[in-house]
Length: 192
Ligand SMILES: *[C@@H]1O[C@H](CO)[C@@H](O)[C@H](O)[C@H]1NC(C)=O
Ligand SMILES: *[C@@H]1O[C@H](CO)[C@@H](O)[C@H](O)[C@H]1NC(C)=O
Figure 1 (cartoon, rainbow, N blue to C red):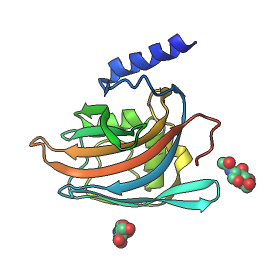
Figure 2 (tube, rainbow, N blue to C red; figure 1 turned 120 degrees about the horizontal axis):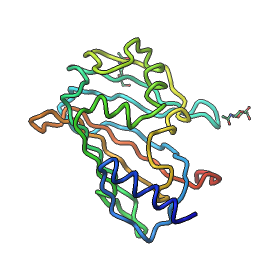
Figure 3 (cartoon, helix red, strand yellow; figure 1 turned 90 degrees about the vertical axis):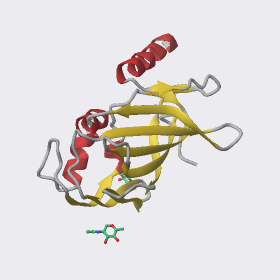
Figure 4 (cartoon, helix red, strand yellow; figure 1 turned 60 degrees about the vertical axis):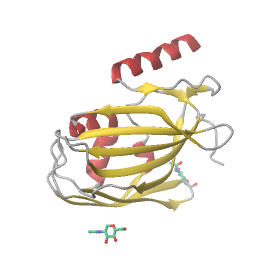
């Protein structure tokens, strides 16, 4: 059973081109995602993410806010995802997971899986495919449970992660940047 799970993980990694520093000291297994924070980071603000998590009831947390694109969000862009993991002795360890891809718009759709459609609906989009024109997109709230259905490996290392998403143009300038902090828990664990 364990061997099969590891095999699935390795298959995913080779398919998706991502690089992971194996963390043999961390247990791995099926997980659920607890999203903790989302905030923007330094960029030229061509793609502006004004998003936040907001607790609606004791068991529902929503993502709210708006995003503004000053240029079309399309496949000329490069997406650079870098995950830092929280070390056992404290401190963020960068490059725990690195994934860089061209064709940002199309590949975001692949990475997001079913969450792509939930996001488009939540931002009242009538555009359902790439590219997305420049403009402001607003959401009144999307249940974060709809976002954990990502096209990601079903098995991963448990722990706390800080994942930075950078959108670059061909000249490698960072046009947009946001960070998501999250914890991967065993399916039955409660957040602390
Ligand atoms: C959230 O809690 C309410 C009240 O206890 C319950 O009715 C509802 O089913 C819960 N929703 C989820 C998704 O767990
Ligand atoms: C977008 O979000 C920011 C930060 O919450 C807010 O100041 C701004 O008014 C919002 N813009 C629109 C168009 O809703």
